[in-house]
Length: 222
Image (cartoon, rainbow, N blue to C red; front, side, top):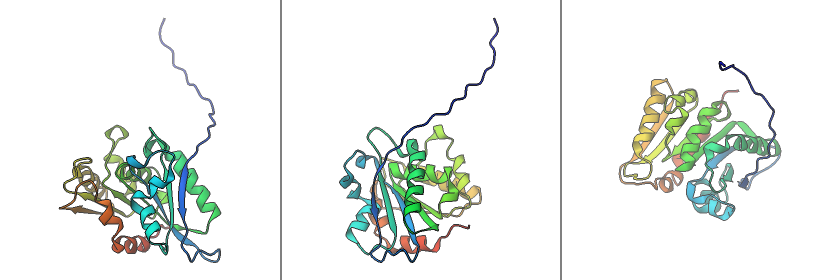
């Protein structure tokens, strides 16, 4: 008997859940709209203890600088998962926060470090229309997902990537390959390689006021 072709289709409903930290600027008011940064942490902060998310990056900056002028949205990735597995949940969370708070949707920014850097490249490439700029820090690409060619979807979104030249965890060649591919596509990409840093290049990156000044210059076309 020969093989016959068939198609199976069924609607599947599921519940997604993410714990998250939310920082509001001290000037927060319903009378104006605010820029938002979606931050994706690294693999070491996974779990169900939100205090771990404050260890690095944007949540640490917001903790140390209460006057941080952005709404900072910092979800926590559950154990045994990665951000690449949570695209739907992240977008739904972003929708929820955008709906309930006074967010300037032309100034929504995406960043992440290490595992979160991978997530930033991935989520930004999947939904470039959602973000005014993407900042992957010591991130890279999963060849199984079609990178680095897939990054061309970010050709109209400003990207500033960071990496340490001495990184032994995620080779800086991955950021270089993604930036090179994005340039080939005509993208607007900057790449900063710190010659003296290893995997932890995020401490210096997120402590630099120039990063936030650059972000605030970026607006998504409506």
